[in-house]
Image (tube, rainbow over all chains, first blue to last red):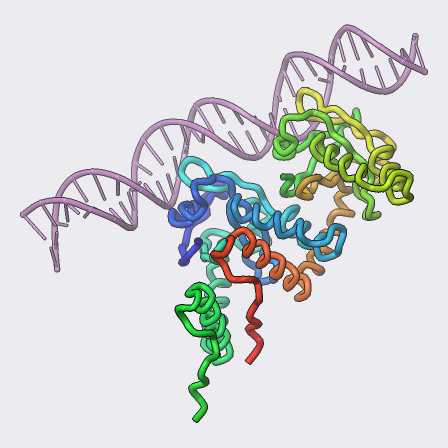
Length: 171
Length: 171
DNA sequence: TGTGTAAATTTGGAATATCATGGGTAAGGA
DNA sequence: TCCTTACCCATGATATTCCAAATTTACACA
């Protein structure tokens, strides 16, 4: 799992060190896929062969020739760079992707569970601030609580009660 | 798997270098099949022997003499060029296919999972733009998220809960 | 708790290999 | 004979690998 955030530098040749904990999360593989995030946040999304295998399985589940599938295949499959880490854990960021995500000298690697993101540091700071506000909203916390209760119930297999939450605001 | 997009040039003899990563995806085979894409986007679709074997199996599953089968056999089997890569990984694009896809001096190879596409660069740029817009649509992202959750559930074999997504917008 | 040592990681640069492309030559068909 | 095709080699550009220094991190010991 890709967790935490790390900063790294782009050298004169466009090379970047993948943070060691992320290399571990790649499970020893040296192949890395990178593409501009679908949601238009302006960052890059990336992962290893395991993630791409999951995406392949996901995309081939969508109806062939459907607009949705074609759009996603174009963005994720055709739109991704197929990179290989060198011995010291570096990749060369393609010029095109650097331009797409506005990456120049320093970048941020942000964990995203099964994938990771690559950010321009300033954009990442702004995104972080926005997300912090959103996370603090009562609806967000409530949704998290509901989902957590469901998982707890499912995994506990009876050890925990069903998620009929008692609303603290009542009574 | 055919991933990423590469640009290549058509030389004076009508030859084109297959990008090295695509040659790897062909699994060492030197035979390449090429035909105009069925969906009318104006690009060529291609693959190696593995893809053609899959298509053969698929087409022979369809009722013989059915209009559907005849149409597909005509387009994919009769309509495809059967090419052989030379020692340096090049093929000669047939005149007919170049005309069909409007290919002149430079072309784009776009990965398409089990096959690849060959595009006129300008047409590819336009297609890319359209697909980027479609991919960013909330319905598309939602469809992808649902499909991904299903794959996650299936592959996780119980480690993950069933994909009954909790809508964060509720409550 | 502080310090020294060892290990791992990041960084810079040079050597090497691979790849895309151009051109030449001979064989085969029209 | 002329044209196309298949096969061969050459080369510049690019990417990859290798080596080594600098920095950070982890660990043991005082």
